[in-house]
Length: 252
Image (cartoon, rainbow, N blue to C red; front, side):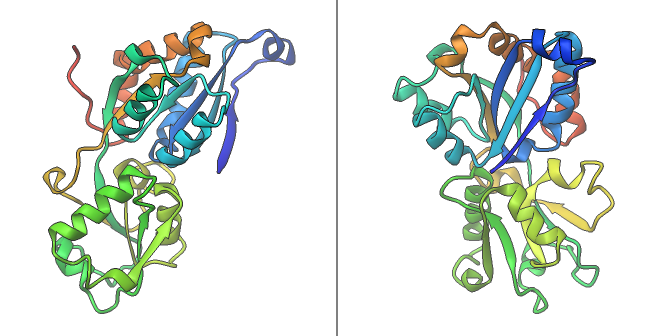
């Protein structure tokens, strides 16, 4: 589990005076969350934004066991709804904030991404990385895509499972997997935008990656949790999501 603190603080005194909001965020948000946190903290001087990244299902398990998060940003809507069903989050706070996009990515210049099927069945491909379908919505979408292409059985022995979508991307970036199903937001982030090539998976081939935010029971006592949720729906955040390749849901 990757844990980091995005604390943009001018001095130690500011840090002590600031209010903290703890965010559990799906791994596909690894690149965009830092930009979001920066803009949020600029709008809320003294605020400290602490982010824990992981597969959505793994974060749900942590919340279920009492992890001290104020807000949960899931890669789908199902995991937040499961928490609502168990009375572990504020039921009326569930808000769709972005729509993720799945791509097939390679850093191997010899593999051509003319079509998804051609790339996946290329004889030079020995390993295909996906996120864990049992805990990561992007992994589930990858599994559904392979089923759509009728390749799930044929490619079963080539599949390597990452803990989350960022971990799957690491397999590709390191060359340990020739291909990987990852989030578009990862491959167009500044760190990787010139690394390899990618092709988008048609959205109709998998369950929509509508990402939802929800305030936890603990977060209801933290005003910053509500402010961050409002921020996610605002024009600044929507422009940031679009820059990182997300589609944004229509405003209510």
